[in-house]
Amino acid sequence: PPPPSGPTAGPKPLRPPPRQPGPEAAAAPWSPAPVSPSPQPTPSPHAAAAGAQPSAQQAPRQAEDPASGHSGEAFLMEMLAAMDQHMQQLRKTQQGLVAIIELSCRRALGGHFGRLVLVGSAALRVETPGSDIDVVCFTRRDQPHAVGLPAEVLRCVDWALRDLAAQFSDYAASLSMELIDDARVPILRVLWGPPESPVAVDVSVDQHRPVDHVRWFQRVGAAPRVTAPPPAVAPLVTLTLRCVKWWLRQRRIPRTKEGGLPTIAWLLMVVHVCSLPETHKQAIVSSQRPMAALLESLTAFFRRYAALQRLDGVLRFATDGSSSEFRPHADERGGPWAELVVLDPTREGPESLNLVPRLPPATQLLLAHELRRAGRGLERVPRGRGGEPPGEGRRTLEGVFEPLPEGINIMPSAPAGDTGVLVLCPGARGGAALGVELGRVDSVAPRPGWAAPFLHRSDERSELRVRLCDVDAAGRCRPRPGSAVALCPRHFICRARLEVEEPGGWRLDREGAERLRAMQGLLRDLGPEGEEAAPPRAGGAAATAKAATAAAGASSVAARGAEARAPPPAARAAPSPPP
Image (cartoon, rainbow, N blue to C red):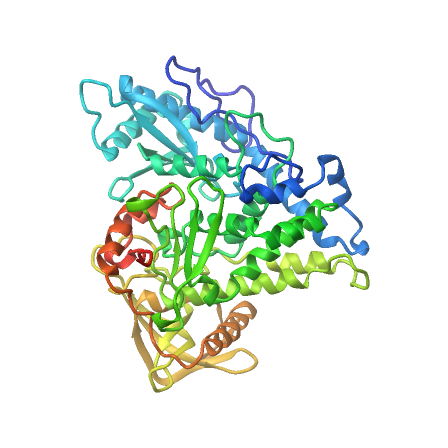
Protein backbone atom coordinates (compact mmCIF):
# COMPACT_ATOMS: atom_id res chain seq x y z
CA PRO A 1 0.00 0.00 0.00
CA PRO A 2 1.31 3.49 -0.76
CA PRO A 3 2.42 5.49 2.28
CA PRO A 4 -0.04 8.17 3.40
CA SER A 5 0.76 11.75 2.48
CA GLY A 6 1.62 14.39 5.04
CA PRO A 7 3.40 14.14 8.40
CA THR A 8 2.22 11.59 10.93
CA ALA A 9 3.07 10.91 14.56
CA GLY A 10 4.45 7.46 15.27
CA PRO A 11 4.01 4.59 12.81
CA LYS A 12 1.96 5.40 9.75
CA PRO A 13 -1.57 4.00 9.70
CA LEU A 14 -1.86 0.90 7.58
CA ARG A 15 -4.09 0.94 4.53
CA PRO A 16 -5.60 -2.31 3.32
CA PRO A 17 -4.19 -3.41 -0.04
CA PRO A 18 -6.54 -4.01 -2.96
CA ARG A 19 -8.60 -7.17 -2.67
CA GLN A 20 -7.40 -10.06 -4.76
CA PRO A 21 -9.88 -12.31 -6.56
CA GLY A 22 -10.64 -15.47 -4.65
CA PRO A 23 -12.52 -16.67 -1.57
CA GLU A 24 -13.70 -13.88 0.69
CA ALA A 25 -11.77 -13.67 3.94
CA ALA A 26 -13.74 -13.87 7.15
CA ALA A 27 -11.33 -11.38 8.69
CA ALA A 28 -13.34 -8.53 7.22
CA PRO A 29 -13.87 -5.17 8.97
CA TRP A 30 -15.54 -5.47 12.32
CA SER A 31 -16.70 -2.95 14.90
CA PRO A 32 -17.71 -3.25 18.54
CA ALA A 33 -21.32 -2.98 19.63
CA PRO A 34 -22.39 -0.28 22.08
CA VAL A 35 -21.94 -1.19 25.70
CA SER A 36 -25.50 -1.15 27.05
CA PRO A 37 -27.44 -4.43 27.22
CA SER A 38 -30.81 -4.80 25.52
CA PRO A 39 -33.30 -7.51 24.54
CA GLN A 40 -31.76 -10.13 22.28
CA PRO A 41 -33.04 -13.40 20.82
CA THR A 42 -32.30 -16.12 23.35
CA PRO A 43 -31.94 -19.48 21.62
CA SER A 44 -30.51 -21.06 24.78
CA PRO A 45 -30.38 -20.44 28.54
CA HIS A 46 -26.83 -19.14 28.09
CA ALA A 47 -28.20 -16.08 26.31
CA ALA A 48 -31.30 -15.75 28.48
CA ALA A 49 -29.83 -13.07 30.71
CA ALA A 50 -29.61 -10.76 27.71
CA GLY A 51 -33.34 -10.95 27.18
CA ALA A 52 -34.06 -9.32 30.52
CA GLN A 53 -32.42 -6.04 29.63
CA PRO A 54 -34.00 -2.68 28.72
CA SER A 55 -33.52 -0.88 25.45
CA ALA A 56 -30.52 1.17 24.42
CA GLN A 57 -32.45 4.40 24.98
CA GLN A 58 -32.22 3.77 28.72
CA ALA A 59 -28.43 3.49 28.71
CA PRO A 60 -27.67 7.21 29.26
CA ARG A 61 -29.34 6.94 32.66
CA GLN A 62 -26.26 5.05 33.85
CA ALA A 63 -24.01 8.08 34.08
CA GLU A 64 -25.59 9.31 37.29
CA ASP A 65 -24.09 11.56 39.89
CA PRO A 66 -21.83 9.62 42.29
CA ALA A 67 -23.86 10.91 45.21
CA SER A 68 -26.95 9.08 43.91
CA GLY A 69 -25.63 5.71 45.09
CA HIS A 70 -25.05 4.41 41.55
CA SER A 71 -21.40 5.42 41.14
CA GLY A 72 -20.43 1.76 40.71
CA GLU A 73 -22.77 1.43 37.74
CA ALA A 74 -21.39 4.65 36.27
CA PHE A 75 -17.88 3.23 36.65
CA LEU A 76 -18.81 0.09 34.68
CA MET A 77 -20.38 2.16 31.92
CA GLU A 78 -17.33 4.41 31.66
CA MET A 79 -14.94 1.43 31.75
CA LEU A 80 -16.72 -0.28 28.86
CA ALA A 81 -17.02 2.96 26.89
CA ALA A 82 -13.30 3.65 27.35
CA MET A 83 -12.48 0.15 26.07
CA ASP A 84 -14.74 0.72 23.05
CA GLN A 85 -13.08 4.03 22.30
CA HIS A 86 -9.60 2.54 22.59
CA MET A 87 -10.43 -0.40 20.32
CA GLN A 88 -12.13 1.87 17.78
CA GLN A 89 -8.97 3.96 17.51
CA LEU A 90 -7.02 0.82 16.61
CA ARG A 91 -9.61 -0.67 14.28
CA LYS A 92 -8.33 0.71 10.97
CA THR A 93 -4.76 -0.27 11.79
CA GLN A 94 -5.88 -3.77 12.78
CA GLN A 95 -7.94 -4.13 9.61
CA GLY A 96 -5.05 -2.94 7.47
CA LEU A 97 -2.60 -5.33 9.13
CA VAL A 98 -4.98 -8.28 8.69
CA ALA A 99 -5.50 -7.35 5.04
CA ILE A 100 -1.74 -7.23 4.43
CA ILE A 101 -1.40 -10.65 6.09
CA GLU A 102 -4.14 -11.98 3.82
CA LEU A 103 -2.35 -10.63 0.76
CA SER A 104 0.87 -12.28 1.93
CA CYS A 105 -0.95 -15.59 2.43
CA ARG A 106 -2.34 -15.38 -1.10
CA ARG A 107 1.08 -14.63 -2.56
CA ALA A 108 2.79 -17.37 -0.56
CA LEU A 109 0.22 -20.10 -1.20
CA GLY A 110 -1.14 -19.24 -4.64
CA GLY A 111 -3.86 -21.73 -5.55
CA HIS A 112 -3.50 -23.45 -2.18
CA PHE A 113 -4.93 -20.43 -0.34
CA GLY A 114 -8.46 -21.02 0.91
CA ARG A 115 -9.54 -18.29 3.31
CA LEU A 116 -8.47 -16.26 6.32
CA VAL A 117 -10.79 -16.53 9.32
CA LEU A 118 -11.00 -14.21 12.31
CA VAL A 119 -11.13 -16.11 15.62
CA GLY A 120 -10.47 -15.42 19.29
CA SER A 121 -11.64 -12.42 21.30
CA ALA A 122 -12.11 -10.12 18.29
CA ALA A 123 -14.50 -12.60 16.67
CA LEU A 124 -16.38 -12.97 19.97
CA ARG A 125 -16.55 -9.16 20.44
CA VAL A 126 -14.91 -9.44 23.86
CA GLU A 127 -11.56 -7.88 22.97
CA THR A 128 -9.98 -5.48 25.43
CA PRO A 129 -7.06 -3.03 25.18
CA GLY A 130 -3.94 -5.09 24.63
CA SER A 131 -5.79 -8.03 23.06
CA ASP A 132 -4.11 -9.71 20.12
CA ILE A 133 -5.93 -10.43 16.88
CA ASP A 134 -6.09 -14.15 16.05
CA VAL A 135 -6.59 -15.40 12.51
CA VAL A 136 -6.44 -18.85 10.94
CA CYS A 137 -5.25 -19.36 7.38
CA PHE A 138 -7.02 -22.32 5.80
CA THR A 139 -5.44 -24.05 2.82
CA ARG A 140 -7.18 -25.89 0.00
CA ARG A 141 -6.79 -29.65 -0.11
CA ASP A 142 -8.09 -30.13 -3.65
CA GLN A 143 -4.80 -29.21 -5.32
CA PRO A 144 -2.59 -31.84 -7.01
CA HIS A 145 0.38 -31.12 -4.73
CA ALA A 146 0.46 -31.06 -0.94
CA VAL A 147 0.88 -27.65 0.64
CA GLY A 148 3.22 -28.82 3.41
CA LEU A 149 3.17 -28.73 7.19
CA PRO A 150 1.79 -25.68 9.05
CA ALA A 151 5.28 -24.52 10.05
CA GLU A 152 6.37 -24.63 6.40
CA VAL A 153 3.29 -22.67 5.33
CA LEU A 154 3.94 -19.99 7.95
CA ARG A 155 7.57 -19.76 6.87
CA CYS A 156 6.41 -19.01 3.33
CA VAL A 157 3.95 -16.41 4.62
CA ASP A 158 6.76 -14.88 6.69
CA TRP A 159 8.94 -14.53 3.58
CA ALA A 160 6.05 -13.03 1.61
CA LEU A 161 5.41 -10.50 4.38
CA ARG A 162 9.06 -9.49 4.47
CA ASP A 163 9.13 -9.09 0.70
CA LEU A 164 6.00 -6.95 0.83
CA ALA A 165 7.38 -4.79 3.64
CA ALA A 166 10.68 -4.30 1.79
CA GLN A 167 8.79 -2.63 -1.07
CA PHE A 168 7.71 0.19 1.25
CA SER A 169 10.62 1.47 3.31
CA ASP A 170 8.39 3.78 5.36
CA TYR A 171 6.57 0.75 6.74
CA ALA A 172 9.42 -1.72 7.21
CA ALA A 173 10.70 -0.10 10.42
CA SER A 174 7.32 -0.48 12.14
CA LEU A 175 6.62 -4.06 11.01
CA SER A 176 8.21 -7.11 12.61
CA MET A 177 7.55 -10.84 12.51
CA GLU A 178 8.33 -13.71 14.86
CA LEU A 179 7.92 -17.27 13.60
CA ILE A 180 7.42 -19.78 16.40
CA ASP A 181 7.73 -23.00 14.48
CA ASP A 182 8.65 -25.42 17.29
CA ALA A 183 5.34 -25.08 19.15
CA ARG A 184 2.65 -27.73 19.13
CA VAL A 185 0.61 -25.21 17.15
CA PRO A 186 3.06 -23.12 15.08
CA ILE A 187 2.35 -19.40 15.14
CA LEU A 188 3.47 -16.46 13.03
CA ARG A 189 3.29 -13.37 15.22
CA VAL A 190 3.07 -10.12 13.25
CA LEU A 191 3.67 -6.86 15.13
CA TRP A 192 3.04 -3.30 13.98
CA GLY A 193 3.99 -0.16 15.86
CA PRO A 194 6.25 0.76 18.78
CA PRO A 195 7.71 -2.15 20.80
CA GLU A 196 6.02 -1.03 24.02
CA SER A 197 2.48 -1.08 22.56
CA PRO A 198 2.32 -2.84 19.19
CA VAL A 199 -0.73 -4.10 17.35
CA ALA A 200 -0.27 -7.88 17.25
CA VAL A 201 -1.79 -10.50 14.96
CA ASP A 202 -1.22 -14.22 15.54
CA VAL A 203 -1.53 -16.40 12.44
CA SER A 204 -2.01 -20.16 12.58
CA VAL A 205 -2.73 -22.65 9.80
CA ASP A 206 -5.64 -25.07 9.35
CA GLN A 207 -6.75 -24.94 13.00
CA HIS A 208 -10.45 -25.85 13.08
CA ARG A 209 -11.02 -25.82 16.82
CA PRO A 210 -10.81 -22.01 17.28
CA VAL A 211 -13.41 -21.63 14.53
CA ASP A 212 -15.62 -24.23 16.21
CA HIS A 213 -15.37 -22.29 19.49
CA VAL A 214 -16.47 -19.03 17.84
CA ARG A 215 -19.42 -20.75 16.18
CA TRP A 216 -20.45 -22.31 19.50
CA PHE A 217 -20.45 -18.95 21.29
CA GLN A 218 -22.48 -17.51 18.41
CA ARG A 219 -24.94 -20.39 18.55
CA VAL A 220 -25.67 -19.91 22.26
CA GLY A 221 -26.12 -16.15 21.86
CA ALA A 222 -22.92 -15.09 23.64
CA ALA A 223 -21.38 -13.59 20.48
CA PRO A 224 -22.86 -11.97 17.35
CA ARG A 225 -23.18 -14.04 14.20
CA VAL A 226 -21.20 -13.03 11.13
CA THR A 227 -24.22 -13.47 8.86
CA ALA A 228 -26.51 -11.27 10.97
CA PRO A 229 -26.41 -7.47 11.21
CA PRO A 230 -24.35 -6.21 14.16
CA PRO A 231 -26.55 -5.97 17.26
CA ALA A 232 -27.65 -2.49 18.24
CA VAL A 233 -26.35 -3.17 21.73
CA ALA A 234 -24.33 -5.95 23.34
CA PRO A 235 -26.06 -8.76 25.28
CA LEU A 236 -25.45 -8.98 29.02
CA VAL A 237 -23.49 -12.23 28.72
CA THR A 238 -21.12 -10.60 26.20
CA LEU A 239 -20.53 -7.66 28.52
CA THR A 240 -19.84 -10.03 31.40
CA LEU A 241 -17.35 -11.95 29.28
CA ARG A 242 -15.60 -8.73 28.36
CA CYS A 243 -15.39 -7.46 31.95
CA VAL A 244 -13.98 -10.77 33.20
CA LYS A 245 -11.44 -10.77 30.39
CA TRP A 246 -10.41 -7.23 31.36
CA TRP A 247 -10.09 -8.35 34.99
CA LEU A 248 -7.81 -11.19 33.87
CA ARG A 249 -5.57 -8.69 32.15
CA GLN A 250 -5.59 -6.04 34.86
CA ARG A 251 -4.79 -8.53 37.62
CA ARG A 252 -2.16 -10.33 35.48
CA ILE A 253 -3.82 -13.72 35.96
CA PRO A 254 -1.42 -16.38 34.58
CA ARG A 255 -2.11 -17.32 30.98
CA THR A 256 -1.84 -20.72 29.34
CA LYS A 257 1.72 -20.24 28.17
CA GLU A 258 2.74 -19.42 31.75
CA GLY A 259 0.90 -22.38 33.28
CA GLY A 260 -2.53 -20.88 34.05
CA LEU A 261 -6.05 -21.47 32.79
CA PRO A 262 -6.74 -20.97 29.08
CA THR A 263 -8.86 -17.91 28.32
CA ILE A 264 -11.42 -20.16 26.62
CA ALA A 265 -11.93 -21.98 29.95
CA TRP A 266 -12.55 -18.68 31.77
CA LEU A 267 -15.08 -17.65 29.12
CA LEU A 268 -16.94 -20.95 29.37
CA MET A 269 -17.09 -20.58 33.15
CA VAL A 270 -18.68 -17.14 32.65
CA VAL A 271 -21.24 -18.50 30.19
CA HIS A 272 -22.19 -21.23 32.67
CA VAL A 273 -22.79 -18.75 35.51
CA CYS A 274 -24.79 -16.41 33.26
CA SER A 275 -27.08 -19.34 32.38
CA LEU A 276 -27.94 -20.22 35.99
CA PRO A 277 -31.56 -19.49 37.00
CA GLU A 278 -30.51 -17.40 40.00
CA THR A 279 -28.29 -15.20 37.81
CA HIS A 280 -31.07 -14.77 35.28
CA LYS A 281 -33.56 -13.92 38.03
CA GLN A 282 -31.27 -11.26 39.47
CA ALA A 283 -30.75 -9.78 36.00
CA ILE A 284 -34.51 -9.42 35.60
CA VAL A 285 -34.80 -7.69 38.98
CA SER A 286 -32.08 -5.22 37.94
CA SER A 287 -33.30 -4.83 34.36
CA GLN A 288 -34.36 -1.20 34.73
CA ARG A 289 -30.69 -0.25 35.14
CA PRO A 290 -28.50 -2.14 32.63
CA MET A 291 -25.25 -1.62 34.50
CA ALA A 292 -26.92 -2.85 37.69
CA ALA A 293 -27.69 -6.09 35.84
CA LEU A 294 -24.04 -6.30 34.74
CA LEU A 295 -22.91 -5.70 38.32
CA GLU A 296 -25.10 -8.57 39.54
CA SER A 297 -23.82 -10.85 36.77
CA LEU A 298 -20.19 -10.13 37.68
CA THR A 299 -20.93 -10.63 41.37
CA ALA A 300 -22.55 -13.99 40.62
CA PHE A 301 -19.49 -15.13 38.65
CA PHE A 302 -16.92 -14.28 41.30
CA ARG A 303 -19.13 -15.51 44.13
CA ARG A 304 -19.52 -18.84 42.33
CA TYR A 305 -15.76 -19.49 42.10
CA ALA A 306 -14.54 -17.69 45.22
CA ALA A 307 -13.36 -20.89 46.95
CA LEU A 308 -11.13 -23.74 45.81
CA GLN A 309 -13.86 -26.32 46.35
CA ARG A 310 -15.93 -24.42 43.76
CA LEU A 311 -13.20 -25.18 41.22
CA ASP A 312 -13.12 -28.89 42.05
CA GLY A 313 -15.37 -30.58 39.53
CA VAL A 314 -16.38 -31.05 35.91
CA LEU A 315 -18.04 -28.30 33.86
CA ARG A 316 -19.94 -29.84 30.97
CA PHE A 317 -22.03 -28.21 28.22
CA ALA A 318 -24.58 -29.65 25.87
CA THR A 319 -23.20 -29.50 22.34
CA ASP A 320 -26.19 -27.47 21.17
CA GLY A 321 -25.74 -25.03 24.05
CA SER A 322 -29.12 -25.85 25.57
CA SER A 323 -27.75 -26.55 29.06
CA SER A 324 -24.66 -26.71 31.23
CA GLU A 325 -23.79 -28.45 34.48
CA PHE A 326 -20.99 -28.24 37.04
CA ARG A 327 -20.62 -31.55 38.86
CA PRO A 328 -18.30 -31.57 41.92
CA HIS A 329 -15.84 -34.40 42.28
CA ALA A 330 -16.57 -37.14 44.79
CA ASP A 331 -15.15 -36.59 48.28
CA GLU A 332 -13.17 -39.83 48.28
CA ARG A 333 -10.61 -38.30 45.94
CA GLY A 334 -8.83 -36.87 48.98
CA GLY A 335 -6.63 -33.80 49.35
CA PRO A 336 -7.54 -30.12 49.67
CA TRP A 337 -6.65 -29.07 46.14
CA ALA A 338 -9.02 -28.60 43.23
CA GLU A 339 -9.03 -30.52 39.98
CA LEU A 340 -10.95 -28.42 37.49
CA VAL A 341 -12.22 -30.01 34.30
CA VAL A 342 -13.83 -27.84 31.60
CA LEU A 343 -14.96 -30.04 28.73
CA ASP A 344 -14.81 -28.58 25.25
CA PRO A 345 -18.46 -28.02 24.21
CA THR A 346 -17.57 -28.62 20.56
CA ARG A 347 -16.36 -32.17 21.27
CA GLU A 348 -18.40 -35.04 22.64
CA GLY A 349 -18.28 -38.79 23.10
CA PRO A 350 -14.89 -40.37 22.36
CA GLU A 351 -13.54 -36.95 21.32
CA SER A 352 -14.36 -35.40 24.70
CA LEU A 353 -11.55 -33.01 25.63
CA ASN A 354 -10.58 -31.24 28.84
CA LEU A 355 -9.40 -27.69 28.12
CA VAL A 356 -7.73 -27.18 31.52
CA PRO A 357 -4.19 -28.34 32.39
CA ARG A 358 -3.46 -29.69 35.85
CA LEU A 359 -2.78 -26.66 38.03
CA PRO A 360 -0.10 -26.85 40.77
CA PRO A 361 -1.30 -25.97 44.29
CA ALA A 362 0.66 -22.70 44.29
CA THR A 363 -1.15 -21.55 41.15
CA GLN A 364 -4.49 -22.64 42.60
CA LEU A 365 -3.79 -20.54 45.69
CA LEU A 366 -3.12 -17.47 43.55
CA LEU A 367 -6.33 -17.96 41.56
CA ALA A 368 -8.37 -18.55 44.72
CA HIS A 369 -7.00 -15.35 46.27
CA GLU A 370 -7.77 -13.22 43.22
CA LEU A 371 -11.25 -14.68 42.77
CA ARG A 372 -12.13 -14.18 46.44
CA ARG A 373 -10.67 -10.67 46.44
CA ALA A 374 -12.81 -9.67 43.44
CA GLY A 375 -15.90 -11.39 44.84
CA ARG A 376 -15.66 -9.61 48.19
CA GLY A 377 -15.12 -6.28 46.46
CA LEU A 378 -18.19 -6.72 44.25
CA GLU A 379 -20.30 -7.72 47.25
CA ARG A 380 -19.40 -4.41 48.92
CA VAL A 381 -20.51 -2.25 45.99
CA PRO A 382 -23.60 -0.25 47.08
CA ARG A 383 -26.74 -1.18 45.18
CA GLY A 384 -28.36 2.26 45.41
CA ARG A 385 -30.27 1.56 48.61
CA GLY A 386 -29.28 4.87 50.15
CA GLY A 387 -26.98 5.76 53.02
CA GLU A 388 -23.75 4.93 51.16
CA PRO A 389 -20.86 7.42 51.14
CA PRO A 390 -20.69 9.35 47.85
CA GLY A 391 -18.60 7.55 45.25
CA GLU A 392 -18.19 4.40 47.36
CA GLY A 393 -19.21 2.09 44.52
CA ARG A 394 -16.71 3.65 42.13
CA ARG A 395 -13.86 3.40 44.63
CA THR A 396 -14.68 -0.23 45.36
CA LEU A 397 -14.76 -1.23 41.69
CA GLU A 398 -11.55 0.66 41.03
CA GLY A 399 -10.02 -1.64 43.63
CA VAL A 400 -11.50 -4.76 42.01
CA PHE A 401 -10.00 -3.83 38.63
CA GLU A 402 -6.83 -2.27 40.07
CA PRO A 403 -3.98 -3.05 37.64
CA LEU A 404 -0.96 -4.96 38.88
CA PRO A 405 2.56 -4.39 37.53
CA GLU A 406 3.57 -6.30 34.43
CA GLY A 407 5.27 -9.57 35.37
CA ILE A 408 4.08 -9.66 38.98
CA ASN A 409 2.75 -13.21 38.53
CA ILE A 410 5.61 -14.45 36.32
CA MET A 411 8.83 -16.03 37.57
CA PRO A 412 11.65 -14.74 35.34
CA SER A 413 14.21 -17.28 34.21
CA ALA A 414 16.99 -14.72 34.78
CA PRO A 415 15.91 -12.43 37.65
CA ALA A 416 17.80 -9.22 38.29
CA GLY A 417 18.36 -7.46 41.60
CA ASP A 418 16.51 -8.27 44.82
CA THR A 419 13.67 -10.48 43.59
CA GLY A 420 11.12 -11.27 46.26
CA VAL A 421 8.70 -14.15 45.79
CA LEU A 422 5.80 -15.76 47.59
CA VAL A 423 6.17 -19.53 47.50
CA LEU A 424 4.13 -22.49 48.69
CA CYS A 425 6.89 -24.19 50.61
CA PRO A 426 6.61 -27.69 52.08
CA GLY A 427 7.92 -28.10 55.61
CA ALA A 428 9.43 -24.60 55.88
CA ARG A 429 8.77 -24.43 59.62
CA GLY A 430 9.11 -28.10 60.42
CA GLY A 431 6.68 -30.91 59.77
CA ALA A 432 5.16 -31.84 56.44
CA ALA A 433 2.51 -29.15 56.10
CA LEU A 434 2.66 -26.55 53.36
CA GLY A 435 3.19 -22.89 54.18
CA VAL A 436 3.01 -19.61 52.26
CA GLU A 437 6.40 -17.96 52.71
CA LEU A 438 8.17 -14.83 51.55
CA GLY A 439 11.58 -15.47 50.05
CA ARG A 440 14.39 -13.75 48.24
CA VAL A 441 15.65 -15.48 45.11
CA ASP A 442 19.36 -16.29 45.25
CA SER A 443 19.61 -18.04 41.88
CA VAL A 444 17.60 -19.69 39.11
CA ALA A 445 18.70 -22.71 37.07
CA PRO A 446 16.30 -23.29 34.14
CA ARG A 447 15.98 -26.83 32.89
CA PRO A 448 18.16 -27.78 29.90
CA GLY A 449 16.77 -26.43 26.64
CA TRP A 450 14.50 -23.83 28.22
CA ALA A 451 14.80 -20.53 26.31
CA ALA A 452 11.77 -18.48 27.41
CA PRO A 453 12.31 -15.41 29.64
CA PHE A 454 9.97 -16.91 32.26
CA LEU A 455 9.55 -20.29 33.95
CA HIS A 456 6.44 -22.40 33.41
CA ARG A 457 4.36 -22.91 36.55
CA SER A 458 4.15 -26.68 36.11
CA ASP A 459 7.90 -27.07 35.63
CA GLU A 460 9.44 -29.57 38.06
CA ARG A 461 12.91 -29.67 36.51
CA SER A 462 14.08 -26.07 36.82
CA GLU A 463 15.44 -25.01 40.20
CA LEU A 464 14.90 -21.93 42.35
CA ARG A 465 17.31 -21.23 45.19
CA VAL A 466 15.33 -19.16 47.68
CA ARG A 467 16.25 -17.72 51.07
CA LEU A 468 13.12 -17.52 53.23
CA CYS A 469 12.39 -14.39 55.25
CA ASP A 470 10.55 -13.51 58.45
CA VAL A 471 8.05 -10.65 58.10
CA ASP A 472 6.78 -8.51 60.97
CA ALA A 473 3.45 -6.68 61.20
CA ALA A 474 4.93 -3.54 59.62
CA GLY A 475 6.16 -5.44 56.56
CA ARG A 476 9.84 -5.39 57.55
CA CYS A 477 11.57 -8.61 56.59
CA ARG A 478 14.92 -10.22 57.28
CA PRO A 479 16.46 -13.48 56.07
CA ARG A 480 15.66 -16.41 58.33
CA PRO A 481 18.85 -18.11 59.56
CA GLY A 482 19.49 -21.41 57.83
CA SER A 483 16.46 -21.00 55.58
CA ALA A 484 17.97 -21.49 52.11
CA VAL A 485 15.79 -23.95 50.20
CA ALA A 486 15.78 -25.46 46.72
CA LEU A 487 12.37 -25.28 45.06
CA CYS A 488 10.98 -25.59 41.55
CA PRO A 489 8.61 -23.30 39.59
CA ARG A 490 5.54 -25.29 40.66
CA HIS A 491 6.07 -23.84 44.18
CA PHE A 492 6.02 -20.25 42.85
CA ILE A 493 2.91 -18.18 43.66
CA CYS A 494 3.85 -14.65 42.64
CA ARG A 495 6.54 -12.04 42.93
CA ALA A 496 6.67 -9.52 45.78
CA ARG A 497 8.36 -6.16 45.67
CA LEU A 498 11.13 -5.75 48.25
CA GLU A 499 12.28 -2.24 49.10
CA VAL A 500 15.74 -2.00 50.65
CA GLU A 501 15.32 -0.40 54.06
CA GLU A 502 18.65 -1.00 55.79
CA PRO A 503 21.70 -3.19 55.28
CA GLY A 504 20.54 -6.79 55.31
CA GLY A 505 16.83 -5.92 55.52
CA TRP A 506 13.90 -5.06 53.28
CA ARG A 507 10.32 -3.89 53.50
CA LEU A 508 7.52 -5.71 51.71
CA ASP A 509 5.26 -3.38 49.70
CA ARG A 510 1.55 -3.01 50.48
CA GLU A 511 0.28 -5.34 47.74
CA GLY A 512 2.78 -8.05 48.68
CA ALA A 513 1.91 -7.82 52.39
CA GLU A 514 -1.81 -8.09 51.63
CA ARG A 515 -1.25 -11.09 49.38
CA LEU A 516 0.94 -12.83 51.96
CA ARG A 517 -1.65 -12.45 54.73
CA ALA A 518 -4.58 -13.37 52.49
CA MET A 519 -2.97 -16.52 51.10
CA GLN A 520 -1.82 -17.67 54.51
CA GLY A 521 -5.45 -17.33 55.59
CA LEU A 522 -6.64 -19.26 52.54
CA LEU A 523 -4.22 -22.07 53.33
CA ARG A 524 -5.46 -22.24 56.93
CA ASP A 525 -9.02 -22.50 55.63
CA LEU A 526 -8.05 -25.61 53.65
CA GLY A 527 -7.34 -27.50 56.87
CA PRO A 528 -4.30 -29.39 58.15
CA GLU A 529 -3.70 -31.47 55.04
CA GLY A 530 -0.08 -31.28 53.97
CA GLU A 531 -0.32 -32.96 50.61
CA GLU A 532 1.41 -31.34 47.67
CA ALA A 533 -1.46 -32.18 45.32
CA ALA A 534 -4.45 -34.44 45.00
CA PRO A 535 -3.58 -37.94 43.76
CA PRO A 536 -4.37 -38.71 40.12
CA ARG A 537 -7.55 -40.56 39.34
CA ALA A 538 -7.45 -44.26 38.66
CA GLY A 539 -6.81 -45.02 35.02
CA GLY A 540 -6.33 -41.35 34.26
CA ALA A 541 -2.69 -41.27 33.16
CA ALA A 542 -3.20 -42.49 29.60
CA ALA A 543 -6.31 -40.40 29.10
CA THR A 544 -4.53 -37.40 30.59
CA ALA A 545 -1.65 -37.66 28.15
CA LYS A 546 -4.07 -38.08 25.26
CA ALA A 547 -6.09 -35.06 26.38
CA ALA A 548 -2.97 -32.94 26.73
CA THR A 549 -1.79 -33.84 23.25
CA ALA A 550 -5.17 -33.01 21.75
CA ALA A 551 -5.49 -29.83 23.78
CA ALA A 552 -2.38 -28.40 22.17
CA GLY A 553 -4.44 -27.14 19.26
CA ALA A 554 -7.60 -26.41 21.21
CA SER A 555 -7.77 -22.69 20.65
CA SER A 556 -5.82 -19.77 19.32
CA VAL A 557 -6.37 -18.24 22.71
CA ALA A 558 -4.40 -21.13 24.21
CA ALA A 559 -1.72 -21.31 21.54
CA ARG A 560 0.39 -18.23 22.21
CA GLY A 561 3.92 -17.72 21.09
CA ALA A 562 5.94 -18.61 24.14
CA GLU A 563 4.11 -21.90 24.40
CA ALA A 564 6.75 -23.01 21.94
CA ARG A 565 9.14 -23.11 24.83
CA ALA A 566 6.76 -24.65 27.36
CA PRO A 567 7.57 -27.81 29.34
CA PRO A 568 7.05 -31.22 27.77
CA PRO A 569 3.52 -32.67 27.60
CA ALA A 570 3.92 -34.64 30.83
CA ALA A 571 4.41 -31.44 32.81
CA ARG A 572 1.39 -29.76 31.21
CA ALA A 573 -1.02 -32.65 30.94
CA ALA A 574 -4.65 -31.79 31.48
CA PRO A 575 -6.56 -34.12 33.81
CA SER A 576 -9.02 -36.38 32.09
CA PRO A 577 -12.71 -36.26 32.97
CA PRO A 578 -13.83 -38.89 35.48
CA PRO A 579 -14.99 -42.18 33.94
